[in-house]
Image: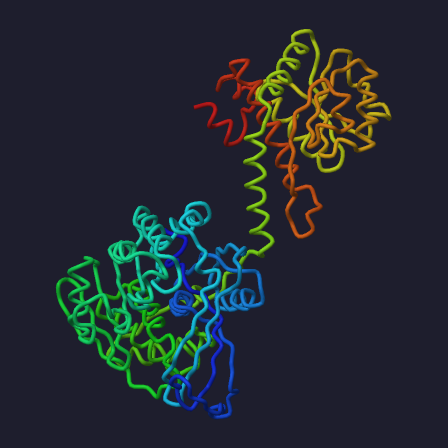
Length: 536
């Protein structure tokens, strides 16, 4: 089973709604006044992709949004809206500014929309490859749009989704003249539309792309013949939708509603349509559910389901009124899943980058010298010990156990107890691995001095080649990190991981040198799952 029923990338927009008696032409002026006691201006969650994800979510789907945003006031507002209804988010927060739109809504529910793409326009194919492959491959359905995301990026998303076996959905939201060249080339647009299994254009968005843009049946047929999707569904406002599927055209009627605001009705349709497919409806019934969501959307100001329970109830009522059956939604599927804190996501990115750099910069010659020293002293009767102070103490305990289980007997040396008698566990010619990120911890330096006094050799695992620990050691293995990660950047997080990585590499070097096989491992680890596995 896929982790997500639907994952999408595209516009996520703070919508600033302005109530106006009518939409103005150029050079006109008008006085603003609230409608039915509402304020003149309201700020709501919106965006072509975020809207349809929201409607799919309130109908029980496990939903995720991925892309680029900014860590600004607008971005925090949008993320809070996602959290309220349980949309999981996978976002880079290094964008220039989060997207917003100014939307004028007249007394009859008509609207004019002015969009600022912001960070959404900055998402690149390289971002998709580097950061979002996992979420794409974890989704049964992957959606995007022709609205704000660069066409080359949408193309990469759809290619990745196709390769992962996902159903691909494209919302064609702006006409050719707005898509090209602002979003990319005509060739890229054709490639995007050709990668859609489900192609959902609005009638206004096909101008310049088809021969008869005012005839929805002709639009559906021409798009189907040109781009060969599984289904084309053209939304036409109060006229409902035209569905092309299995070489057949069908008109799906709209529900009759008193329109408050038509913004996002097509987005709500798409969310309902995908939800219908998820719940096992055929194309026709899924489109009927889509029309029901579009109708419910028109009964509120804004496109995102800010009152999930009320929006879901109205959508299901409209669906039944349109001849649909009872749609059963597991209440458990509506519970909002907790989202990780932005600091958590940032830490994971930092850790990945730091460990990658430590692995790339690892001094393999020093690693081999350290392994040779340990083996030579072992051949002369010497033993291996591992020590550290603070968090590295725990790393030292783990490393001693790891070395022992892979063929190099090792014991833990308590760093502070060493100067109070525990250094007596050493004999001349032993080897001690001393772990310290700074390399200047006084207690560890005292321990190392005592170790030297016993005639033992020292291998340093440290983040600083110029540290005092490094200068008094026989071999230095660097585990240098630039950032620890976390809210304060102080607690040893990535440095501990880096030390573990270096010690893991040393254990592999030692194990490989002694031709340690499965039977050797089993003798040292006969118990548990690994014991059973090594015995086979």
